[in-house]
Structures are given as C-alpha cells and as structure tokens.
Amino acid sequence: MTRINLLRVIGIVTAIVLALHAGLAFYGDLVRPNFRASDLFSGEIPPDKAKLAAAGGLAPFSWDGDLLANYAAAMAADILHRPSIDAGGRASENKAVQAAVIAALKVSPIRPALWLTLGTLQAQAGEAVTPAVKMSYLSGSVPIDVAFSRVQTVTSSAAATDEEIKLLAQSDIRAALAHRSRYEPLLIAAYVQATPQGKSLLLETAKVTDPKFNEILRRY
Image: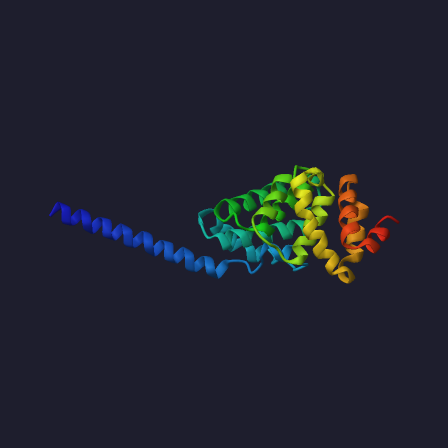
C-alpha cells in the first residue's frame, strides 16, 4: 500500500509540474513582445514599458528563448530610443538590459541580431564590444539592416582592429554597397564617425568592390 501511495504522490506531483509548465508556456505565448532583435536595427518602434511589464514578470522564470530574446530586444530598443535624462539613470538601465540580453543568449545563443544588440549596448556604455560582435558574425546570417548596423558598430569601435572581424565585416560592407542607392549616405556617415582603423576597413573594401565609391569616401 505504501508503494501505491508513493506512486500516486509521484503521479500527482508530475501532473502538477506538467500543468504548471503548460500554463507558463501558454501565458508566455500571450505576453511575448512582438519585437525581435532585428527590429531594433530596422527602425521599428518598440512597445511601451506597460506592455512589457507582463513579459518582464515572467522572464525570470522562463526558459522560452523567444520570450526572453524578444523581451530583451524590446527593452534594449526602449532605452536606446527613449534614454533616461540623467547619466546615472542611463548607466543603470544599460546594465539591467545587458543582463536581460545575456540571460536570453544563455538560453538561446544562436541569435546574431541579439549578439549585436549586446554589442550596441556595450558600445553605449563604453565597454569592449569585440567578443559580442564576433559572436554576431559566427552565430548566423542577418538581414541587410542588421548587417549595416554591424558595420557602424565595427567601424566606430576597437572591433575594427580585430583581424577576424575585419574579414567578416567585409561581407557586410559589400552587402551595403550592393544597395548603394539606399546606403550611400549612411555609409558616408559611418565613415565620418569611424575610427582610423574603421576608415581603413571601409576604404579597402570599397576600393575592391566599388572604386568610385572609394573615391567619394576619400573626400571626407
């Protein structure tokens, strides 16, 4: 009889755990922000903080990679588009959102746009961006908007001194040059804001891919 009771208890506990898991998964689907990391780099407006509150409450208990990634991306977009007025507030927000991004990447690391989001936040905080940017390249392909944002991050930071990233970044620059009519002003702006190493990377890639654009860049 004792064994039967034990089996019953195990069965009841298992059923409760499965029910809780199913309930959390269902609730996660309901509150998951409809905002991906790639949306951050394509100009999409992030949801307001009130809409993120439910996802934020569930995030610490969730292993849903999509929920965690979308929540972190939306939070990143919020502080990048609507930053705090004071420097202390911006630093605190940046640290909190970096933690959310890292938590999402620990659960679901094959997210190149989210790695770039981490690099963008680190750049804003004056931190090293090279490891995050490199993971952005190594974890998969990205849309052209994300690729161009990655060019901006690479060329304006110490990442442009990393030999592996320089090789990988050339594909992003070539992709932007393939859509030159759309990205020419943005590439020029990126060149103006680039570090000396970033300028060299842009010039060298343009010289091979689009010599005429290389000449244009040299005017700035």
